[in-house]
Length: 205
Image 1 (cartoon, rainbow, N blue to C red):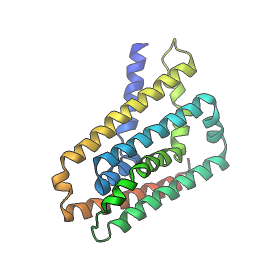
Image 2: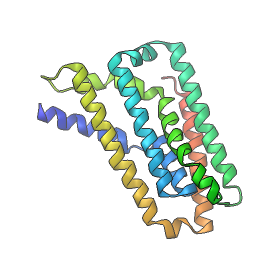
Image 3: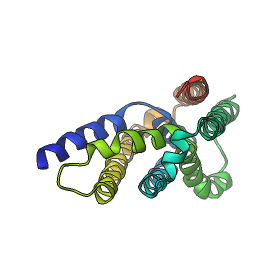
Image 4: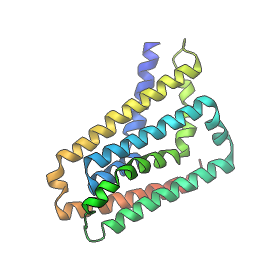
């Protein structure tokens, strides 16, 4: 059983570290408002994983995965949200402007909800949790408790990876704070978010 658990952890770790919308959102929040905002976005992202995990265990995610219409609606909403985030990042970065301090304070809750909505509108997570996660449950464990354990493991890996990534950006703050670097990173992140949105929309599922 432990060998199977290690193998499952490896699959989940690979899924976690692959560049995607989550990393782009954390990067955008770190560049725009600092490490604390990036960590709040990470908390929202992990909350989204837990929501999908609960839905998968309860069988709700299977309904989405099996319904082409529901999948399409969630997919297009998620794609639109990513494009919106990317366009807003480009707009905020148009002259290398930095959000004022009052905006930083007011954006605390916004960072969490940005991360949460990004994952909540990602139907690929539902498909993964319904299609692959049950197969990763080690022999000897009931499916539902085993899936719950793997969802928690996925969440823990996400906290470690995205939290470490936010910390790395914080350590490079002196470089990131340079106007030219900030503009380049802000534009690259905005373009990446838009690109992820377009890819999600174009994905046949």
